Image 1 (spheres, one colour):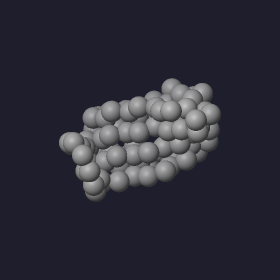
Image 2 (cartoon, one colour):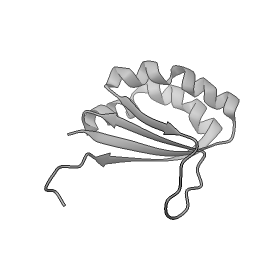
Image 3 (tube, rainbow, N blue to C red):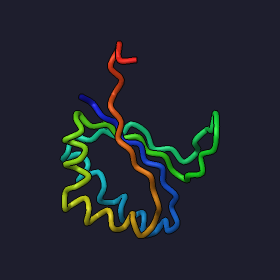
Image 4 (tube, rainbow, N blue to C red):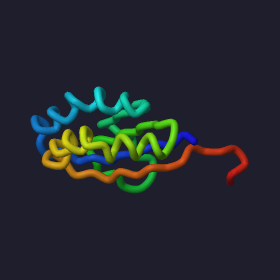
Length: 100
């Protein structure tokens, strides 16, 4: 089943964060990831959204998503993101008609 990952990110060091961005897609696409959206001008419709960047990713399965996130290659790259930003990251299942 398709899963989505939503990241809320506050970037404190754009130079260091760019090192993360440079290597991201090479690793991400190996794990069947699809970039659905990256937005730094989120329109808040309700509530508060105190983040610089919002990212929406898609994977064919939770196993693919976690294989990407947990792989050594990504974790090594993510050290740049960890040093340059703070983030929340969640994984949600795709909607299945009739599941509500």
